[in-house]
Length: 439
Image 1 (cartoon, helix red, strand yellow):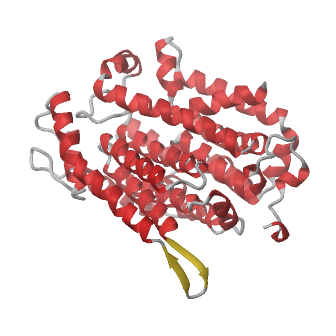
Image 2: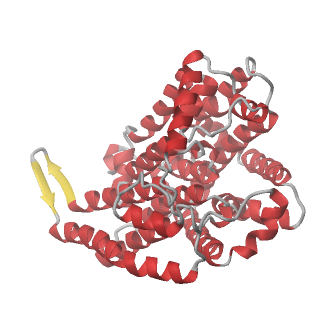
Image 3: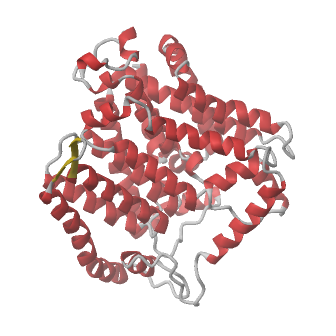
């Protein structure tokens, strides 16, 4: 029963539905998050024996230090205590830990079914927000969020860039669940990813999708059997060019369809102009007024960099960004996750964050897990998170990120959750990686 209940909680976090439904019932989103936090803690408490074992693992403990312990220390010298941000950090860690427990209890296939449902809901929200955004009007009026993004899809996440990043992260786990895929399945999956992400008009998201597609085909095209013995699959290489070729060939049809179905947004860099520019890899295209759409971001980066250099070791204190913006000291977002971490909590916490991500990729069990999945999922996740951090400061606020991260950490802790016997009761051996004798 508790596993079924927590699967619903995971689905709410993966889709953003909680933030869409809550305002319709006049319920504060913060109150919903508080209830979800309590349920996360309840699930962890029920599975306290498993939680106690995996908390000792370096990956879980490292994220506890990064998300909970370090922000608490950095609050001491912050301009004011931001209780909301501290509460969110606790929420993210409990979500991460609970997802790891869920996978160890129920296996990867069970989690992947939730991912599949989440993708279906996300795609529905994407299309609904693009062609019937009136359904989001009541939510926008209650929460104060806008629903007009020059025709760009924003889905239940209510922001195009976040939708693009989260959709790509969901795809990585879903695609890994397909295991040994046929060329035709791979083709339609990757082609669909490129089309859906392009509808968000997110240039950073499009780069992430292109990176994922490229890494998938690198994995399928090249096999290193022995040193200096590399096998290349011509079929996979041809499929790679077919995916991008078909996508580029469909762009005129897509633009024609969107032009006919969407209202004209004069004076703005609308979704049609964005998709056209992205298909040509013109990511710094100017809008209809002749202004570059990245100038504002570059100015923000320069300003944040200057303020970060004033206090590079400790930063300005956890939550200082929101406090400074409320006071008018800061007007723009940094649009850079690395700069935001350094700005608030210093360069050492930034280095610690990068080390946490790198430690997952260099983990000795990573190759074995990817071999069982038959895909380089860890490389895909690592690349998406790295690229997203360069163009957005919302990576560490994404609940999808912590669910996906928890999934891949659980696979490192116990690759056995990929086996057919994942429904059996958890034994202490489940928390040990498969020995070299069983490889």
